[in-house]
Amino acid sequence: MADRSVDHLLIGGGIAAATCAQTLREEGATGSILLVARELDPPYHRPPITKGYLGGTETKEEGLIDLPEDVEVLTRTSVMALDLATKTVTLSNKETVAYGTALLATGAMVRRLQIDGVHLDGIHYLRAHGNADSLIEDAEAVTDVVCVGGSYIGCESAATLTTLGKQVTVVLLEEEPMERAFGLQVGAWVRGVLAGHGIQVVSDVEVERFEGEGDRVQRVVLAGGRSIDAELVVAGVGVTPDVMLARKSGLEIGERGGVRADAQLRAHGADGLYVAGDIAEYDSPVHGGAIVRVEHEEHAAAQGRTVARNMLGAAVDHTEVPYFFSDLADWASFEYVGPALAWDEEVLEGDMAEGEFTVWYVADGKVAAMLSAGGHGDIDRGKELIATGGAPPTNN
Ligand SMILES: Cc1cc2nc3c(=O)[nH]c(=O)nc-3n(C[C@H](O)[C@H](O)[C@H](O)COP(=O)(O)OP(=O)(O)OC[C@H]3O[C@@H](n4cnc5c(N)ncnc54)[C@H](O)[C@@H]3O)c2cc1C
Image 1 (spheres, protein in one colour):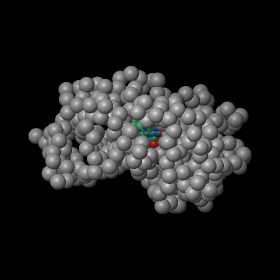
Image 2 (tube, helix red, strand yellow; image 1 turned 90 degrees about the vertical axis):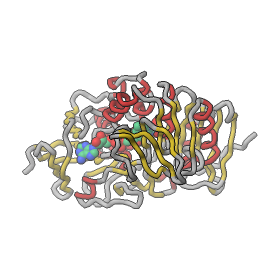
Image 3 (cartoon, rainbow, N blue to C red; image 1 turned 180 degrees about the horizontal axis):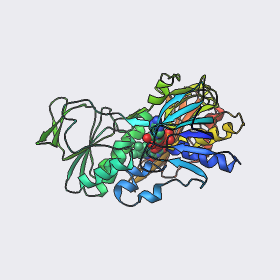
Image 4 (cartoon, helix red, strand yellow; image 1 turned 45 degrees about the horizontal axis):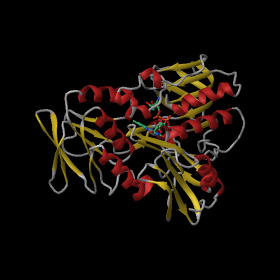
């Protein structure tokens, strides 16, 4: 017998769980809702961590997500075990809780570099408020910063730290920043934006090791021997879905490292259990049934909404096209809908030099993704064309 039971159990204190809680109440759920979150803070938005929160223009409180008052939130509490057969969890405070329906939304963890010197002081990763707090404190007295990784975490942090007066270099494995997700053309534009604000972009190279004086990092040494002064390092080298609890409970893990779910976001082989957000590897109807896993804030929220409806019996597929946005300080911004798993053509509209353009990513004549920079283009039209398998608008 469990110590107590709840109607809806939400595991993980991120946007997916928080949005699920909000939607349950909006959709008229009257049952009990318990949200169990490992972090010190109640649910909050992570994007400001590389943007306004890091730059000091947004407070922690501004990033918190409003929850209905009658949602019970347990922070600093982990779900240690999940028994799929009895539909019961064990919490880190030893309490056992039985659930009617549950959401597993444990998010992702940063991937850590495994090279010499990683234990030196001054090397930072960014995922939670606490990471940003220690980076901000550590950055106060330094000038030379190296951001390792050319994804949006590395690029956004580089931009924000530049606005704080730091001299920043971005080092990446690829030819262009953000190339993996958005292609070479957009990557070259991102490089131009960064370089235009004094950021050095060093591409096509691996970081070999960090060197320090005493306990503190002093240099980043690249393959080939070049070294770059670095009093502080921000590593943004990807994340891995946090499937520790899922794996332990016997849930199916997919090829993309997430928890397998069907189009309604029901975890395979687990009665009453749903997944959402960074860990969800689902059959996506808007991608022709392909298995998709995405790490975007609005996507996690959208999945939380779908799960809430399905917890209440709607039995709907998750048909929202994943949406992403990025800001490089107040220099440039873009939105993206997709993701394009592969594409064979890019159709550009607008003016890249002005930072106002659209790129259509096309696969077999159909829109696979759309990127809109500087407010150019109609992102809803992009979503519609992706969902319906439409052709890109003609270029003239
Ligand atoms: C610095 C940063 C900037 C970002 N910027 C953007 C952006 O500009 N645009 C964009 O679209 N996306 C951005 N993202 C990505 C976006 O924030 C994530 O996709 C989103 O937070 C995923 O939400 P989630 O609810 O799935 O998981 P998470 O936000 O990771 O939340 C999961 C929570 O579950 C907790 N947890 C894990 N295991 C347990 C357990 N056993 N028991 C209890 N709790 C547990 C974790 O501690 C975590 O707090 C950014 C991410 C980061 C880190």
